[in-house]
Image 1: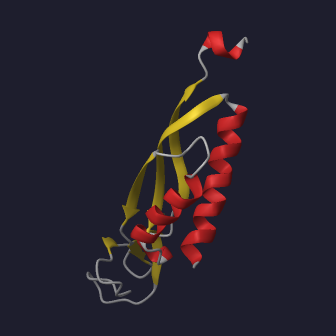
Image 2: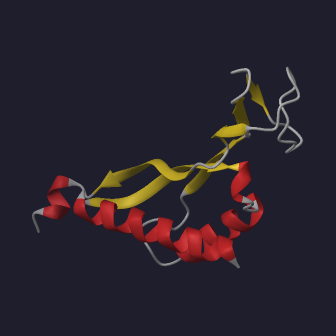
Length: 122
């Protein structure tokens, strides 16, 4: 399952940054996923829940921004959305298309809370 390896890498990144930043609990994670990545968002959410168990991210909310594909025609320069994955320019019919959006896959940000000052000094 490709979703598991993607989420495993993401979780490692979150936990590394949380530890470095003194984050005791991760409350929300935001990631960006381009539709052309072919990832199932429900499976990503399930993998996140499994991988977050017994970590500072357990119970965190996962927000996924799904980015629709878009392209730019090399023939006429038209920029357009690609709602049906057809790589033809709707303006001139050209087939020389550069994908400009839809391949994204990254951690945008995460929120968390730090240890209370009194507990950190004990």
